[in-house]
Length: 264
Image (cartoon, rainbow, N blue to C red; front, side):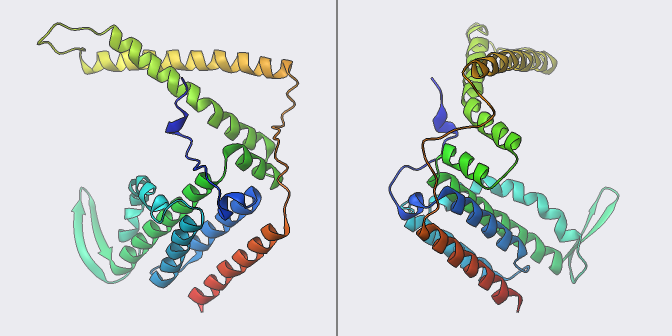
């Protein structure tokens, strides 16, 4: 059984956001992320406007007000990698730390930059979640094709998404097989030393690689036998309608106005 619920986050419903052209949604997502990246550090009004837009889009897409907010917390640990910005910018010293051979100075400008990066990352993750929740993956792939992204890159993304479910099932089978062969007597702990466990894990990774390589070869030959020419086809035409053009133009103008408002 393919555990596609682990990765497929499409929220099936009928809403104006779902009916919008996938190409428009991809473009507006990119524009929104770029707009957040260009907002000045510490411009909390601009960040608040962007956050309000995301909550509004959650409501328009019939996802619930906090749909993307609750699912975006997973990205926060990665945003914390920007903690070095606290000590990298000159400014008023807030605190001093001695770490090994380094004397670190936390400044107000660095702290402002750090929190701004965290908020930008959080907003970008939320709008990406919104895109995935309102666009089926095949439509998303064809939107990237229509936007003239490199075909090889699109093909790699498409097949990675398609077969990561198969790969996850293969991992689960390996884990079940290891567990079935690891019986222990009551009151005893299973397994050996750390090096023994590392050896077993390495063997499992090697088996997974060999099985994946052999499967990919079989799949590619099967696709060639069925006339595959490097192009992924769909039954949806993805034609741009007048409504799509109007939304694209108005939304782009609103993001441009936000940049003018925050910089002047």
